[in-house]
Image 1: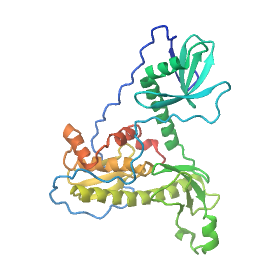
Image 2 (image 1 turned 45 degrees about the vertical axis):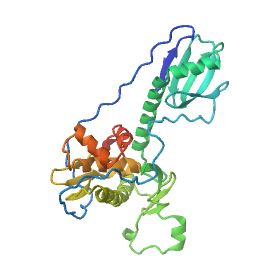
Image 3 (image 1 turned 60 degrees about the horizontal axis):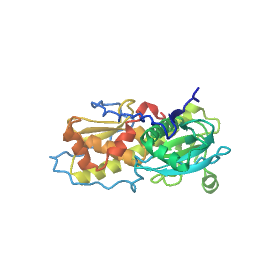
Image 4 (image 1 turned 120 degrees about the horizontal axis):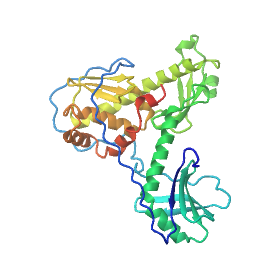
Length: 342
C-alpha cells in the first residue's frame, strides 16, 4: 500500500514506452461578489472621492520582489537514507533536486513525501537514463510537489498554539509568542502601576519581520489560551490597520483613484470588498501573509472602483494598478480566511 500523504508514479524501463504523465488542470478563476463583513476596528478617516483619472502604469512593491512564485523549492533533506545519493536534474521549467535510491525493481519509480521527491531506479539504469526520466515526468513531478507545498503552507498557517513558545504567521514570517516582558525591557524599565497599561512588545522590526522574532504579550504566565489569542489578535489587528492604511494610500496616490472610506473586516469568506459608493473592506487576517499578497488584495478592490465585476476589463484594470499580480492571486486562491488563526 502507498504510505499516507505520498504520491507515487512508476516509469517503466527506458526500453519500454513510458506512460503519459497526468496533467493537473489549472484552478478556475473564482467568481466572487462583494460581501460587506463586520468591522474589527473603527474605520479610517473618510477620503474625498472626486472623478477618477486614468491610472499610471506601475506601483512600487512594498518589499523587494521575491523569487519567482512559480518556482517549486526542492531542498536537500538533512539526513539522506542509507545508500541514497542527492542528485539535481535540469528541466525546461527548473532544476529538480531529488533523493536517488537503487533497487532490484524493474522500473523507475517516483514518490513524493515529506522529504520531497524520491526516485528509485533499477541497478542497471544509468544516471543519464534517470535524468531523462525525470525530465520526461517533470511537469507531473512539479505539479505534485507544488500541491504538497500548498498543503504544508495551509497546515503552517492554521497551526497556531496559543501559548508561550507558540508560533504565529505575520507578514509571511513565523514569529514566536511569549508572555510577560522581554528580559532587556524588564531590567531597564519600571513596570507600570496598572498592568492594563502595558503594551505588547515586538523584538525585531515589525515593518520587516524575520522568522524567529518574538511578540511579548503583557500577560501572566498562567494566562489561558483564549486570553493569549485575544491579546495576540488585538496586536495583529492594530498592525493590519497601520500596514493596510499605508499601502492603500500608496496605491491611491499613484493611481489617482479615490475612495469614500475603508475599514478592517473579520469576514470568514472574503478577503476584501468594494461597494459602488467607494467603501472598501480589507480582512485583517491578510496581515498573516507576505506584503505582495496584501498589495494584490488592495489592487483588486481598487479595480472595482472602475469595474464592479470580474470581467476581462476588470483584470486588465488590476494589471494597470499592480503589474504582475498573477502570482500573488494564485497563492491567495489556495487559502480562505477561515483557514487562518483567529
